[in-house]
Image (tube, rainbow, N blue to C red):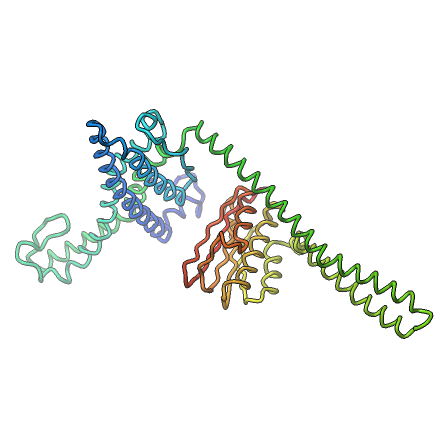
Length: 423
């Protein structure tokens, strides 16, 4: 639609219609259409599977295949939910898949998924193919004047099949069709992408009751994760104080007692003991400060999250670069979680990855804070291997956040945590 006449110059509508913005919008829409084409092919295959299963059930031999067909339906629907969530509001998955034909027929989520499957396997497939055809036509007709003479007589036509070209002027005319296709790509693909996604956005979100059940279960899980993370943090602090600071303070006490007894009979020895006691007290103070910084670094409170991350990267054994763009401040608990994520991830990089360098990227987009740590190490990170990744996940989920780990063998490893900013 045209820009709003009430929009000020340089406003949002004007930016949408700027050439560079239009190109980005069209490329993004084309990417969404191709992604939708992929799920449409899966939907068509699953629709065939469900049709065969339903026909087999009519003669009584398809009932054992019903659970597998329903799981296939849910898998394709969940893949589409993930795809739509990346391009817009998050769509939560439904409740567990029914296991019998009767319960599936009574399940509203399954019925809505089946309606989406039919629509996406037909209309979604058509729109995806159409969206993919448009840029092909741009390339075909736009370059037509360069190669039309290679075609047999009577077959030199535009992508539409007409007119039949017999001379250079006609070939140049077909070349102008390429500009028309290009304009169509620029202005039609966003609409095609929205039409392709519309059935999924209407039919795949869970029912309100199911959404409430899922939300309660999610909150229960995140509350338990928050309690576990809190208990683990308390144990870490207790170990640090007991095994480090407390032992050093006990050593100071022993040295002071020995110096007090030696002060009259051996002043020189007492002075050496007092010097050792002073060094032990300084070490205890340094360890105590390290524990405090591990709980909440003062630079995070006094300055900002980027400053705290720069300080953290400076002490990392692996050369680390910080790229932070965080306008304003987030909630203190969110910033502390982001700092913990970066600190734990860089510790893993130093201990396990064999990396030569790492990058910490922090971005605030709307009301979300995204922390990404990438290293060029050997990869193969496994959350179940006790490398601290499970602690990062618990800490993130306690704030209603999400952890995404990508670590193929050979690297690189990417740890991305998405957190709500809070206020």
